[in-house]
Image (cartoon, rainbow, N blue to C red; front, side, top):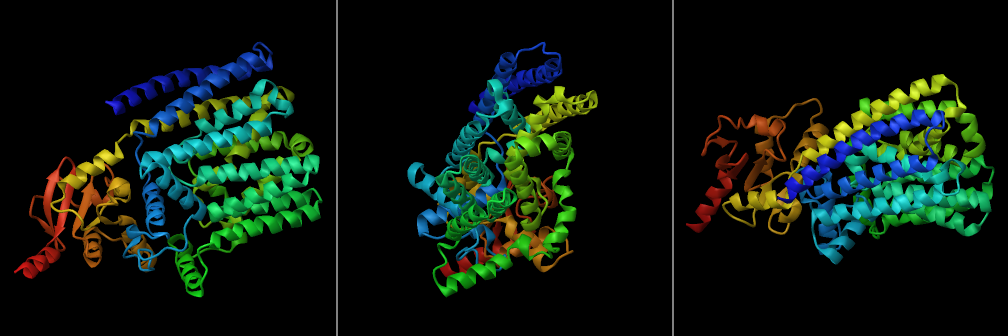
Amino acid sequence: MLKMVVKKYSMCIFANNINLSVKMLEIKGMLMSKKLSAKTTALILFLLVAGIVIVYILSIFTRFPNSDEGIMGEHAYFLSRLGYAKSNLWEGFGYGWEVRQFHYHKFFVIIGMVIIKLFGYSIYHFRISSVVFFLLFTCIFYLYSKPLKENKNYLLFLLSVFILLINNVFYDYIFIYRPEVVLMLFGFTAFFFMDKNLKSRSVHYLVLSAIFAGLSVFTHLNGLIFVFAGFSTYLFNKKYKAALIFGVISGVVSSLYFYDLLSKAEFSGFVYQFFNEPSLAQKQSHPLLRMFTEYVRFFHSPKETLFSLLFFICLGYNFKYLRKRYFNLLIYTLGAMVGLAVISHSHTPKYALLYYPFMAIIISIGILRIREHKKVFSYLMIPLLVIFTGLNLYFNIRIIKKTVNVPERNRYMASLLPQGGHKVMAFETFIFNEIKNYTINGPIAYRYYFSSNRPGYKPDIYDFFEFADKNNDRYILIDWYFMNGKLYKEIQPETIRLDDVINNYKLVTAKDSAFIFENTRLMENQNQEKN
């Protein structure tokens, strides 16, 4: 019932938002002829932002899960129970992560542990924490934009937040249990205090900026881009002493990442796991050479392409203005982009979320200065804004419409298992809240095992079942809701029958798009022990 109410309410508000956003884009054109007051525009933007935020918050209770939520939720669970992180989901990958994991998103997982201690273990508690971090980010965002010239009647703030909320990549990753929202908060807070330090020369702002830059590294190693961006901004401002202080303090705070590596064995374990981490273990080009392929992140798909075009057009047309009035913003943004290009192991657009707020500000400045440019600028911007808004709203609605009650579905799957307390191979988010009842291995270990150890080889369903058998998984759960890709299709759900066997696994349950296989070898061993 709740799912239907949320879904209908979400669609209703989004339908209104589509109409409002189209009107807002018309308003931008009207602003050129001063037909609409700044206060009216701000009011419309406020209603848009408020409506979208309400929809996004409501959607976290029915939204389809991201597999990374399961992985990070597992880290937080074991940290809260054992005092260290480990991952049964990765068993079979081969580097001991199921025993102890030294390389993970340290501070982010600590935050998850605190949430478990205070409120209990739930995917919804984790997601609500992401909403809280987003709201904290908007507060810092507001404080930064408040004194700016373009922020008359809060237009710059509201327009920037609107552009972020509409962005599909932003919605896809910010309102779930992933570290990007925390990184975004810490990185922007570091910039906020750095900007205040450069304008007021107050030392405590410098210290606060360095602390938050360091905390971003402690949260996720991609946070190094904010240390680089801050250090570069001080250098470009010829504040060499401040750059040194910033570097030292942020470095000290960043070193908290190694808080649990207090012995030689622990540090050796970290080095071993870090350099065998799936993405890092793949052949990487030289960091400087990656600069020449970084464009892929900006033009990954039509969604990212439209956002990037808006940014680069506004950057190009307003470069002199930005250099004169927003020099710190300009250098910090470009520094973060260069930093990510150098250290990132892939061109996934989700990592670009770390500097999306800065891009949104520059786009908003360009929109609010639209009357300062020749008509060709508006001819470029307005169609792009219309297409950007419409396309991203379409993809956001698709995310909202794809719903499932994760704990409820997992309880149902668990109820189909003949016995409890065994090792199972299941989708990563089965850990919510069945991690207390089963040892859960995940398909992610199977995928990365073959991509790392047998590059170019395309494993099939028989390899998957053999992998589970080597892990001594008593049961394999294949559920259409969470595993409706290659693996689900390869079991041939239309033709497979009860008692059919695939590599030592017999189909024992087929119900409601859920298939459960039991390991015949382990079952026979158990029967022999009983006899």
